[in-house]
Structure formats: C-alpha cells, structure tokens
Length: 111
Length: 113
Image 1 (cartoon, chains in turn green, blue):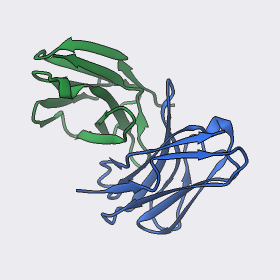
Image 2 (cartoon, chains in turn orange, cyan; image 1 turned 90 degrees about the vertical axis):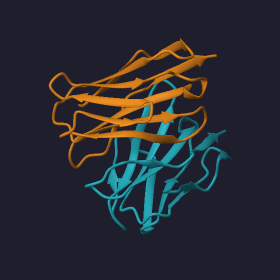
Image 3 (cartoon, chains in turn yellow, orange; image 1 turned 135 degrees about the vertical axis):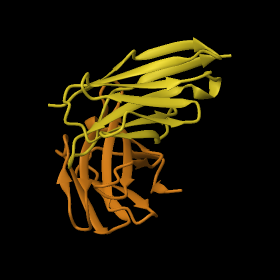
Image 4 (tube, chains in turn green, orange; image 1 turned 90 degrees about the horizontal axis):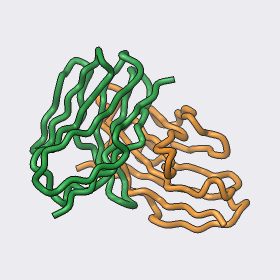
C-alpha cells in the first residue's frame, strides 16, 4: 500500500531562516501531490498542488518541487516568519483514487 | 473562495447514540470526502463520494455510514457511537476527478463519553 513519509516530524527555526520540508512516497505512479497547512484545532488549507507532469509550483515565499523518479517532494519556505508556524502535510494521489496523507511536519518559527 | 461548512465545531455525545455530522460546500463540487484525524495516526479516509447518491468506502469505514442526497451536502453518520470514535472529523471537497485540489472544512471535534 502507498505510504507517505514526512521528515522531520518537528522543526524549530529562528525567524528569517530559509527551510525545507521533506515528503517521500513509495509509488512513482503519481497523479498529483499537494501540500497543506494546518493550524492547531483547525482544518487544512491547500498551499500548492503539483501535477505529475510538473516539476515545481510557487506561491509567494513557498516553492514545492516534485521528483517522481526518487519519490520525493520538498516544500521550501523562504525567509520564515512566526506566522508560518503550523503543521505542514503533504498528500499523494494516484489517478482515480483519494489522497493519502503524510503525518505532517510541525514547524515552529521563533521571533 | 470555496467554502466548506461543517455544522458543529465541538460535539459531545454518549456511547450508543446515533450521531450525524453535516458538511455543506457552496461551489458545486462533485467530490466530497470525510476524514478523521487522530494524534500519531494522521488523516484517515472514512468515506467519499464522486456524485450524488454515490458513495465509496475509504480506509476505515467500519462503524460509519454516509448520505449524499444533494450535491452540496455530505453527511457522516455514526450508527452507534463508541468511545474509540472520539476524534477530529474533517470534511473536504474538490471540483471533480480532473481537478482534485482539496478544500477542507474547519473540522468537528467529537467526544464520545
């Protein structure tokens, strides 16, 4: 069964640092990969969606990349801010199936 | 913006009660999903629906059922609530199978006592 792994589980950085969150999946038959943000006790907010034909997507200070051959995606956050503190989840999807989620990386940005 | 609304933010029920969790989306999305989220286990898919009156089992359907009588509304039903169904329940929707960007509701924290 497809598995999605996110490392590290938790990350603490000072404000202003650039950082990378990692997501790996076990099957290369990917349809799309999505990155979400979740604030404590809240629902998930979609950040970026990368189709299997794409290599990366950018939104503001966020950049997500996809490497199908290695089964990896990264979320790059530039110039981190305290407001970026949240849990970030990636989700993998094969064609015709529902998303499979990783367990997330909890990010804490200190001022 | 797409709005996915879950009827209750917090809910407390007793063991054995029948529980209804309601979810409504306002953007004519075809696909709707119910997940539960538990510490250490992440999000797990309970049921989903690709069209009105259609439903598909997810990874953990036992103890749950769903209803989708109208396109905008997807209900999750706990037939006889048990303490192990205490969890955060998240509803989500997406436009269709060609555009699967997911939009989530704010969640319902259900406690079964």
